[in-house]
Length: 299
Ligand code: ZN
Image 1: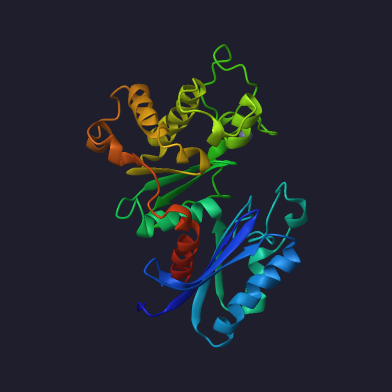
Image 2: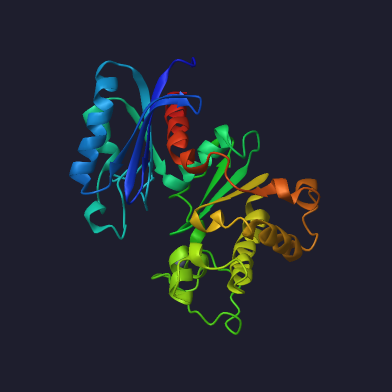
Protein backbone atom coordinates (compact mmCIF):
# COMPACT_ATOMS: atom_id res chain seq x y z
CA UNK A 1 0.00 0.00 0.00
CA UNK A 2 1.60 3.31 -0.96
CA UNK A 3 0.96 6.64 0.72
CA UNK A 4 -0.79 8.16 -2.25
CA UNK A 5 -3.47 5.45 -2.28
CA UNK A 6 -6.82 6.97 -1.34
CA UNK A 7 -9.55 5.50 0.85
CA UNK A 8 -13.03 6.54 1.88
CA UNK A 9 -14.07 6.89 5.52
CA UNK A 10 -17.63 7.23 6.82
CA UNK A 11 -18.44 8.05 10.41
CA UNK A 12 -22.19 7.59 10.70
CA UNK A 13 -23.81 9.00 13.82
CA UNK A 14 -27.40 9.61 14.85
CA UNK A 15 -27.31 13.33 14.04
CA UNK A 16 -24.54 13.68 11.46
CA UNK A 17 -22.44 11.69 9.04
CA UNK A 18 -18.85 12.66 8.29
CA UNK A 19 -17.39 11.43 5.01
CA UNK A 20 -13.71 11.81 4.20
CA UNK A 21 -11.35 10.85 1.41
CA UNK A 22 -7.68 10.45 2.26
CA UNK A 23 -5.01 8.13 3.53
CA UNK A 24 -4.44 9.27 7.14
CA UNK A 25 -4.43 12.27 9.50
CA UNK A 26 -1.81 14.13 7.42
CA UNK A 27 -3.53 13.52 4.14
CA UNK A 28 -7.25 14.31 4.00
CA UNK A 29 -8.29 15.37 0.52
CA UNK A 30 -11.95 16.13 1.14
CA UNK A 31 -14.33 16.07 4.06
CA UNK A 32 -18.06 16.74 4.30
CA UNK A 33 -20.75 16.66 6.93
CA UNK A 34 -24.19 15.32 6.09
CA UNK A 35 -27.20 15.56 8.39
CA UNK A 36 -28.66 12.21 9.40
CA UNK A 37 -32.28 12.26 8.22
CA UNK A 38 -34.07 9.35 6.55
CA UNK A 39 -31.90 6.40 5.48
CA UNK A 40 -32.82 6.98 1.79
CA UNK A 41 -31.92 10.66 1.70
CA UNK A 42 -28.83 10.35 3.90
CA UNK A 43 -27.28 7.39 2.10
CA UNK A 44 -28.01 9.03 -1.27
CA UNK A 45 -26.00 12.06 -0.13
CA UNK A 46 -23.15 9.80 0.97
CA UNK A 47 -23.20 8.03 -2.40
CA UNK A 48 -23.15 11.36 -4.26
CA UNK A 49 -20.09 12.46 -2.32
CA UNK A 50 -18.07 9.34 -3.09
CA UNK A 51 -19.28 8.66 -6.65
CA UNK A 52 -16.77 10.92 -8.47
CA UNK A 53 -13.95 9.06 -6.69
CA UNK A 54 -15.27 5.52 -7.06
CA UNK A 55 -16.37 5.84 -10.68
CA UNK A 56 -12.89 7.12 -11.58
CA UNK A 57 -11.27 4.27 -9.64
CA UNK A 58 -9.55 6.70 -7.28
CA UNK A 59 -10.58 5.00 -4.02
CA UNK A 60 -9.31 1.53 -3.11
CA UNK A 61 -11.97 0.81 -0.49
CA UNK A 62 -14.39 2.41 1.97
CA UNK A 63 -14.69 1.90 5.73
CA UNK A 64 -17.88 2.65 7.67
CA UNK A 65 -18.12 3.24 11.40
CA UNK A 66 -21.84 3.21 12.10
CA UNK A 67 -24.12 3.72 15.07
CA UNK A 68 -25.71 0.46 16.11
CA UNK A 69 -26.45 -2.05 17.20
CA UNK A 70 -25.29 -3.60 13.92
CA UNK A 71 -25.47 -7.17 12.69
CA UNK A 72 -21.78 -8.08 12.34
CA UNK A 73 -22.14 -11.84 12.02
CA UNK A 74 -20.62 -12.56 8.57
CA UNK A 75 -22.81 -15.66 8.26
CA UNK A 76 -26.02 -13.75 8.84
CA UNK A 77 -28.28 -12.82 5.89
CA UNK A 78 -28.58 -9.37 7.48
CA UNK A 79 -24.82 -8.78 7.89
CA UNK A 80 -24.11 -5.04 7.85
CA UNK A 81 -27.71 -4.10 8.66
CA UNK A 82 -28.66 -1.82 11.52
CA UNK A 83 -30.44 -3.93 14.14
CA UNK A 84 -32.70 -2.90 17.02
CA UNK A 85 -31.83 0.81 17.15
CA UNK A 86 -34.20 3.23 18.87
CA UNK A 87 -33.91 5.31 15.66
CA UNK A 88 -36.94 3.60 14.17
CA UNK A 89 -36.52 4.82 10.57
CA UNK A 90 -33.07 3.23 10.44
CA UNK A 91 -34.04 -0.13 11.91
CA UNK A 92 -33.32 -2.89 9.41
CA UNK A 93 -31.40 -0.59 7.02
CA UNK A 94 -28.84 -2.45 4.91
CA UNK A 95 -26.15 0.25 5.25
CA UNK A 96 -23.32 -1.92 3.96
CA UNK A 97 -25.24 -3.39 1.00
CA UNK A 98 -26.76 -0.10 -0.19
CA UNK A 99 -23.39 1.66 -0.29
CA UNK A 100 -21.53 -1.31 -1.71
CA UNK A 101 -24.03 -1.84 -4.56
CA UNK A 102 -24.11 1.87 -5.46
CA UNK A 103 -20.39 2.56 -5.25
CA UNK A 104 -19.10 -0.81 -6.47
CA UNK A 105 -16.00 -0.72 -4.31
CA UNK A 106 -14.81 -2.97 -1.48
CA UNK A 107 -16.59 -1.76 1.68
CA UNK A 108 -16.16 -2.74 5.33
CA UNK A 109 -18.41 -1.90 8.26
CA UNK A 110 -18.02 -1.91 12.03
CA UNK A 111 -19.56 -0.06 14.98
CA UNK A 112 -18.73 3.61 15.56
CA UNK A 113 -16.94 2.73 18.78
CA UNK A 114 -14.87 -0.12 17.28
CA UNK A 115 -13.85 2.16 14.42
CA UNK A 116 -12.86 5.00 16.77
CA UNK A 117 -10.84 2.44 18.75
CA UNK A 118 -9.13 1.44 15.53
CA UNK A 119 -8.34 5.08 14.69
CA UNK A 120 -6.78 5.71 18.10
CA UNK A 121 -4.78 2.54 17.82
CA UNK A 122 -3.51 3.34 14.29
CA UNK A 123 -2.73 7.06 14.73
CA UNK A 124 -3.76 8.16 18.23
CA UNK A 125 -3.24 7.61 21.94
CA UNK A 126 -2.89 3.81 21.83
CA UNK A 127 -0.56 3.71 18.83
CA UNK A 128 1.93 0.87 19.36
CA UNK A 129 -0.03 -0.51 22.34
CA UNK A 130 -1.78 -3.77 21.60
CA UNK A 131 -4.17 -4.88 23.00
CA UNK A 132 -5.86 -1.56 23.74
CA UNK A 133 -9.28 -0.58 25.01
CA UNK A 134 -11.20 2.48 23.88
CA UNK A 135 -14.33 3.54 25.78
CA UNK A 136 -16.79 6.24 24.93
CA UNK A 137 -18.80 7.62 27.84
CA UNK A 138 -21.43 10.05 26.65
CA UNK A 139 -24.97 9.71 25.30
CA UNK A 140 -24.33 5.98 25.51
CA UNK A 141 -21.45 3.92 26.80
CA UNK A 142 -19.54 1.53 24.59
CA UNK A 143 -16.11 0.00 24.25
CA UNK A 144 -13.90 -1.21 21.43
CA UNK A 145 -11.11 -3.69 22.12
CA UNK A 146 -8.23 -3.81 19.65
CA UNK A 147 -6.17 -7.01 19.62
CA UNK A 148 -3.58 -7.74 16.93
CA UNK A 149 -4.66 -4.56 15.17
CA UNK A 150 -8.29 -5.70 14.81
CA UNK A 151 -11.40 -4.73 16.73
CA UNK A 152 -12.79 -7.71 18.62
CA UNK A 153 -15.99 -9.11 17.16
CA UNK A 154 -17.41 -12.41 18.32
CA UNK A 155 -20.93 -13.65 17.67
CA UNK A 156 -21.66 -9.89 17.57
CA UNK A 157 -19.80 -6.76 18.62
CA UNK A 158 -19.22 -6.39 22.38
CA UNK A 159 -21.64 -4.25 24.38
CA UNK A 160 -19.33 -3.09 27.14
CA UNK A 161 -21.70 -0.40 28.38
CA UNK A 162 -24.19 -2.95 29.66
CA UNK A 163 -22.09 -4.77 32.25
CA UNK A 164 -23.03 -4.62 35.91
CA UNK A 165 -21.08 -2.24 38.12
CA UNK A 166 -21.11 -1.90 41.90
CA UNK A 167 -24.22 0.09 42.80
CA UNK A 168 -24.68 1.17 46.41
CA UNK A 169 -28.39 2.08 46.56
CA UNK A 170 -27.92 3.93 49.85
CA UNK A 171 -25.36 6.25 48.32
CA UNK A 172 -27.06 6.54 44.91
CA UNK A 173 -30.75 5.55 45.06
CA UNK A 174 -31.19 6.27 41.31
CA UNK A 175 -32.63 3.03 39.84
CA UNK A 176 -30.82 3.43 36.50
CA UNK A 177 -32.00 4.47 33.04
CA UNK A 178 -31.26 1.46 30.80
CA UNK A 179 -34.53 0.18 29.29
CA UNK A 180 -33.10 -3.34 29.28
CA UNK A 181 -31.18 -3.61 32.57
CA UNK A 182 -31.98 -0.58 34.71
CA UNK A 183 -28.77 -0.04 36.65
CA UNK A 184 -26.14 -1.41 34.28
CA UNK A 185 -23.03 0.75 33.66
CA UNK A 186 -24.72 2.79 30.90
CA UNK A 187 -27.96 2.95 32.90
CA UNK A 188 -26.08 4.57 35.79
CA UNK A 189 -23.25 6.58 34.25
CA UNK A 190 -24.21 7.75 30.73
CA UNK A 191 -25.06 11.37 29.97
CA UNK A 192 -28.85 10.73 29.90
CA UNK A 193 -28.61 8.83 33.22
CA UNK A 194 -26.85 11.79 34.84
CA UNK A 195 -29.42 14.20 33.43
CA UNK A 196 -32.32 12.07 34.65
CA UNK A 197 -30.78 11.76 38.11
CA UNK A 198 -29.69 15.38 38.65
CA UNK A 199 -32.03 17.25 36.31
CA UNK A 200 -29.10 18.91 34.52
CA UNK A 201 -26.76 17.98 31.70
CA UNK A 202 -23.33 16.61 32.62
CA UNK A 203 -21.44 19.51 31.06
CA UNK A 204 -23.30 22.04 33.24
CA UNK A 205 -22.78 20.25 36.56
CA UNK A 206 -20.08 21.89 38.66
CA UNK A 207 -16.83 20.03 39.21
CA UNK A 208 -17.34 20.15 42.99
CA UNK A 209 -20.72 18.41 42.83
CA UNK A 210 -20.41 15.28 45.02
CA UNK A 211 -22.03 13.23 42.26
CA UNK A 212 -18.79 13.17 40.27
CA UNK A 213 -17.20 10.97 42.91
CA UNK A 214 -20.00 8.44 42.36
CA UNK A 215 -19.62 8.71 38.56
CA UNK A 216 -15.87 8.06 38.86
CA UNK A 217 -16.65 5.01 41.03
CA UNK A 218 -18.90 3.54 38.32
CA UNK A 219 -16.29 4.11 35.64
CA UNK A 220 -13.51 2.68 37.83
CA UNK A 221 -15.67 -0.33 38.70
CA UNK A 222 -16.19 -1.08 35.00
CA UNK A 223 -12.51 -0.52 34.17
CA UNK A 224 -11.50 -2.96 36.89
CA UNK A 225 -13.51 -5.68 35.13
CA UNK A 226 -12.13 -4.80 31.70
CA UNK A 227 -8.54 -4.77 33.03
CA UNK A 228 -8.97 -8.15 34.69
CA UNK A 229 -10.69 -9.78 31.72
CA UNK A 230 -9.01 -8.13 28.72
CA UNK A 231 -5.65 -6.99 30.12
CA UNK A 232 -5.33 -3.98 27.79
CA UNK A 233 -1.98 -2.19 27.57
CA UNK A 234 -3.71 1.17 27.28
CA UNK A 235 -7.19 2.47 28.12
CA UNK A 236 -8.56 5.50 26.30
CA UNK A 237 -11.62 7.23 27.69
CA UNK A 238 -13.52 9.45 25.24
CA UNK A 239 -17.06 10.76 24.87
CA UNK A 240 -18.85 13.85 26.17
CA UNK A 241 -18.65 12.97 29.87
CA UNK A 242 -14.89 12.51 29.65
CA UNK A 243 -14.55 16.10 28.38
CA UNK A 244 -14.71 16.85 32.12
CA UNK A 245 -10.96 16.38 32.51
CA UNK A 246 -11.03 16.43 36.31
CA UNK A 247 -12.53 12.94 36.17
CA UNK A 248 -9.29 11.38 34.92
CA UNK A 249 -7.21 11.65 38.13
CA UNK A 250 -10.22 10.55 40.16
CA UNK A 251 -10.79 7.48 37.99
CA UNK A 252 -7.10 6.54 37.96
CA UNK A 253 -6.91 6.68 41.74
CA UNK A 254 -10.09 4.62 42.14
CA UNK A 255 -8.89 1.99 39.66
CA UNK A 256 -5.67 1.55 41.63
CA UNK A 257 -7.58 1.36 44.92
CA UNK A 258 -10.03 -1.12 43.52
CA UNK A 259 -7.36 -3.44 42.08
CA UNK A 260 -5.46 -3.12 45.35
CA UNK A 261 -2.07 -4.03 43.92
CA UNK A 262 -3.24 -7.35 42.53
CA UNK A 263 -2.25 -6.67 38.91
CA UNK A 264 1.51 -6.15 39.15
CA UNK A 265 2.12 -4.21 35.98
CA UNK A 266 4.50 -1.26 35.89
CA UNK A 267 2.36 0.67 33.45
CA UNK A 268 -0.52 0.42 35.91
CA UNK A 269 1.33 0.89 39.19
CA UNK A 270 3.99 3.41 38.13
CA UNK A 271 2.56 5.33 35.21
CA UNK A 272 -1.21 5.18 35.41
CA UNK A 273 -1.34 8.73 33.96
CA UNK A 274 -0.10 7.18 30.73
CA UNK A 275 -2.26 4.09 31.11
CA UNK A 276 -5.72 5.67 31.38
CA UNK A 277 -5.85 8.70 29.13
CA UNK A 278 -7.98 10.80 26.79
CA UNK A 279 -8.11 10.22 23.01
CA UNK A 280 -5.44 11.90 20.89
CA UNK A 281 -7.47 12.27 17.69
CA UNK A 282 -10.34 14.17 19.33
CA UNK A 283 -13.48 14.20 17.21
CA UNK A 284 -11.57 12.76 14.24
CA UNK A 285 -11.08 9.29 15.77
CA UNK A 286 -14.22 7.99 14.05
CA UNK A 287 -13.60 9.25 10.51
CA UNK A 288 -9.89 8.38 10.60
CA UNK A 289 -10.70 5.00 12.11
CA UNK A 290 -12.99 4.42 9.14
CA UNK A 291 -9.99 5.06 6.84
CA UNK A 292 -8.00 2.53 8.90
CA UNK A 293 -10.85 0.03 8.50
CA UNK A 294 -10.89 0.63 4.74
CA UNK A 295 -7.14 -0.01 4.61
CA UNK A 296 -7.59 -3.27 6.51
CA UNK A 297 -10.24 -4.34 4.00
CA UNK A 298 -7.61 -4.02 1.27
CA UNK A 299 -4.74 -5.64 3.14
ZN1 ZN B 1 -28.07 -1.92 29.94
